[in-house]
Image 1: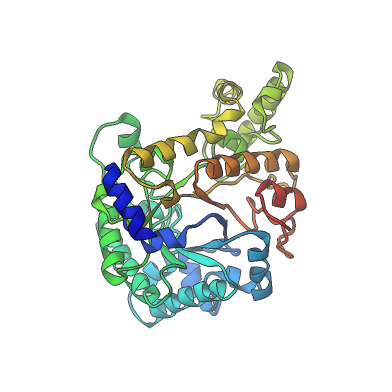
Image 2: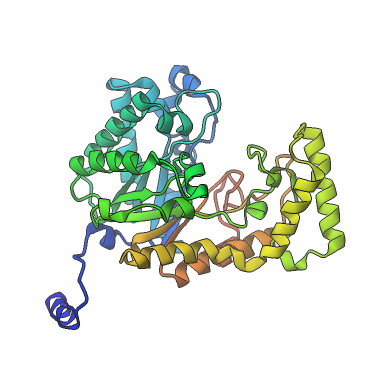
Length: 408
């Protein structure tokens, strides 16, 4: 059949791309596991006796039975975030090797339940530390250490089934935002991505690699990547949290207006002038209490106006842009993956947001990806963005399950 299809394609003048393990991996419905449940500094991680005996520490909380329950729901893969900070802090040697062995163990545990796995080198910004994303992409020596580490992880994964195992070389690289926004200027990420790709590919010739663009792994960064630099055994990832004011409301680690909004409805068209004024006034009060002097009433009012103007259709705009980029480069949309999407489920005072509004967002984003033929991985199983109704039991609420098109 494949031979016949190839002949027909040649007669019709259309090129045929050879099937790769990335095509057979074919991620459709995925769940992100947590990065950490106990948030320590990198120094604390490597000096606290026993802390890294379960790396990362979700392994204390996610039982094999709980993981095995995911596939019957309709999940077919898991994205396993593995923070490289402690491995980089330790450097080459027996302790780093032991953590790499745990990466393989975690991946094998997930696969034993029938799920495919993306091992995700999930660097995050670590303010005041030398081992976070900003340091990695800006420090030549530290980036060289990451390249070597990615090669070692790829070597360790090389014996696993490439149709069920993939490696993401770096989560949300934070550089090049200004150059991307201005459409000009030198960029560092294209060459850095090439170095990471080469290190992984030379160590694992058949392993699907997950690559993304700069500036937090978003669509603007993806659309300036030249995929001709890389082979076809690649899945291209992008993250989409638009509308950001809704998904990241009350996210105190964020420096934007969203950090000061709370209880924001998902459907902007339902916000009348009176409700908008009240929400802005409450956000102004929170900004004042937090000492966020840059979050003036005018800035917060503009954020609200922009949110109302964009409307609910904005949820699918980035998905459509990523699909258009793939079309321009002749990349099958099955080789795209919406690697993260999700929304805060409550504030840090313990107030839960409207669950039905959050579920409506999850459904809209999920449907946008599926309509475009793009696989997805929701962020995250538990925690502030958790899709689990209860972090201890880790079970999905019926409404959230339905919003993600699953069966619970």
